Image (cartoon, rainbow, N blue to C red; front, side, top):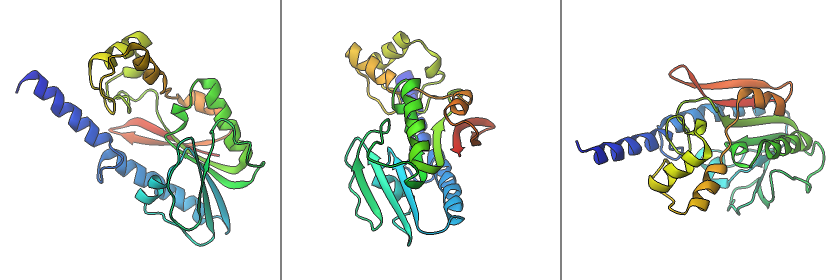
Length: 228
C-alpha cells in the first residue's frame, strides 16, 4: 500500500475511534459511560433539579438520549446559538468565563463536557472553574488528560508536547485530526493555541477538594471527570 494511502487509512481509523458522533466508537462508549455516571448522581438528588451546562449544546443531550425528565431543568450556555426544542431546556448566549447573569448557587449542578480545554490560558480556565463553583452547588466536569499519548483534537501522537512553532508547521502542511491543513501561519497558530489540555495537578488547583474519576484506554488515562 502506498505511503499516502496508509496515512489516509490511519487518519480515518483514528477519527472513527475518536468520533463522539459515531455510535460504538471509543469516544462514544466513554461518553455514554460518563453520562450514566452523571445520571446516577442526579438520580440521588431531590426534585426539582436545576442544571447549567457550561459550553453545552442541545445536540449533546439529544445524542445522550436525554430530552427531558420531570423536575429537571437544564440551562445551556454557549457563545454559539444552539437550537433546543425539548421541554425543560433553555439556551442562553454567554461566556463560560463570566456567568454574571446567574446568581450564587443558583443551580444544583454545573455540568461541562470537553469545554474547559478550549477557553484559553490557565488563567482563563481558572475563571471558568471559579464561575462554575460560584453558580452551582455541585460540579460535574470532563476534560482530556494532557498526558494521554494521542492528542484528541489533532489526533497526532504527542502533539501537545511539541513547541508551538512545530505544531503550527505541521498544521500548515498536513490534515490533522478534525482540522484540514491551514496554510496561513497566523491562523494555524491560533488554532493550535485554541486547545490547552490540563494535567491532573492543574485540575486539583482549579477544583480544590474535588474527587476525580479516570477514563482509561488500554490502561492509560484518556480523560478526567471532576466531581465536587
